[in-house]
Amino acid sequence: MQNQHANTPLILGLVSSLTMAHAATWEKLPPLPEPAAGFVAGCVNGKIIVAGGTNWSDGTKRWLDTVWLFDPATNQWTLGPKLPHSVAYAAFASDGTRLYFAGGADGKQGRKEIYALDDQFKLTRLGDLPQPVVYGAGALRDGQLHVFGGTPDPDDWSKGSNSLYAIHLTTGSTSTLAALKELPNPIGIPAVTAIDNHLYSFTGAWIDASQQAHNATAAFQHEIASDAWKKLAEYHEAIRGVFSVPLDEYRIYLAGGYSSVTAGFVAKAWIYDLRTHQYNASTPMPLAVNTTFVRCGEFIHLLGGEDQMKHRSDTCWRIRASDLLAEKP
Image 1 (cartoon, rainbow, N blue to C red):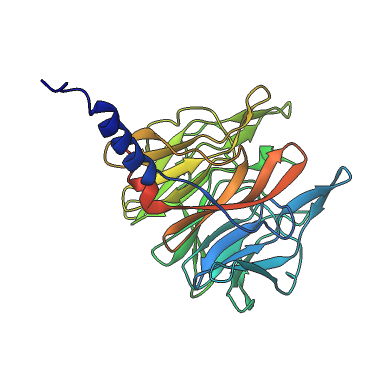
Image 2 (image 1 turned 45 degrees about the vertical axis):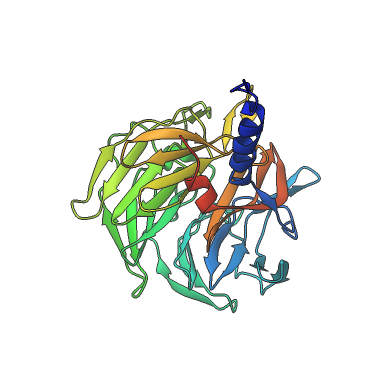
């Protein structure tokens, strides 16, 4: 009688190979022409724009005014005209035709300008925020750039707030929406994304009177129709610098950031499911870094970031969003 388990290794091997074939994997791309973090970035007509940011040279922090464009079709970076001034830590988002960004800092002060940038490097000033906003986060919904959190003074987080602005992209005018009053402290560098008419904010950081930084785990949803905030399940760990990107109409990919002096920067990733309000472990990033994601077509792009204190990375990778969605929680 034939052993009924004789083919088990073969079957398991076949299942394993099929699983591996459909596993979500990162693909390395040509690096950024210069290491950078804190820049604005977006997908514009199938190409990726990276503008501004910061890096370090000989122990000195440099504030950048450069604009780069990456063409996935040729795998090449092209240098564009410089920005009118250096800018980093601005709120930003793209709609596929232009990259919008507002606020940020130039190395000396906070800024309040609102700009739009296209793939021909045409920069249009749309207007101004009511005040400078540094370390805020942005997301597009309903034809508006929403700017949440941050502080007007990059050197003084005590002036920060949990304000929410809506910038009307056709007129450049700014409306003030309901602030997030449930948080006891101002929040900076939250992970913000928009799906349908809802805005989602995860984690972030705040600095106390003794200049000690604290990471947040809080997560919230803002509904545009009611202009109201709702608390969500907290992030699994207190991390600042997490970046988020929507995968589909109800799942958000969250990854990276800085945990603590002991744990340092992290590569861990999670998918938040809006149906179950649960965080499911996902494919981690290829390195531990506080990075920026850009969704362009079917791919999620990982661009540069802070991988050590006072150090920036030029690394670039991409992964298929469909492969992340195919993962079993």
